[in-house]
Length: 207
Ligand SMILES: Nc1ncnc2c1ncn2[C@@H]1O[C@H](COP(=O)(O)OP(=O)(O)OP(=O)(O)O)[C@@H](O)[C@H]1O
Ligand SMILES: Cc1cn([C@H]2C[C@H](O)[C@@H](COP(=O)(O)O)O2)c(=O)[nH]c1=O
Image (cartoon, rainbow, N blue to C red):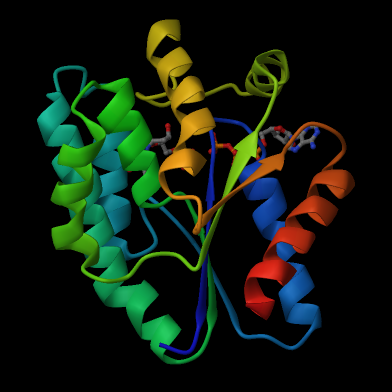
């Protein structure tokens, strides 16, 4: 595949969407063909699965069902949008991908990282990101950013203990996949974080 696949990861409200927007503009100004997408979601079917997963009414959803739905949404996303776009040589920027499942379902739900990875292999086959940027941010700053939100989804409404496990999980993921994953300091202004991200991506694209 000739395209370049970038994923953004981190705890809820860490600033990913804000930075993805800036990165898209950065690449488009340089003349690249860019696809911005998200998980769960990115295609009609995957967005329907997203609505099901994040619906606060679905309080009884089992953790296994949740993990399978995220993987199902991903399978559709890969087959319908991500793989074809990469084959066309595009830059694909995705807000969350398999690492969210490893952390939220593997660690947060205690299903185990290895089990969730293997489950997702069926969905993604050989398509892994060229670079994954994980936002590392002070917990107090996340809280400040979250407080601005009005409507919280099913996952955002989870107990503090769940979010703490997710937060700690994101700190150790780079140790498991040191080649693919780069941590970024997501504290500071939007511009400062953008500049840090550009440096990491330029390095990865030069390799
Ligand atoms: N560097 C920054 N400094 C201060 N506020 C920021 C910064 N980056 C983003 N924000 C604000 O923090 C909030 C969350 O940002 P954003 O929606 O980009 O996060 P996100 O990671 O995409 O969230 P989620 O994954 O939960 O949807 C928004 O109100 C946004 O304006
Ligand atoms: C892909 C993916 C996501 N999640 C969680 C993470 C967030 O709480 C929501 C998605 O909402 P966002 O506003 O788009 O960040 O879903 C997850 O638990 N597992 C996954 O694989």
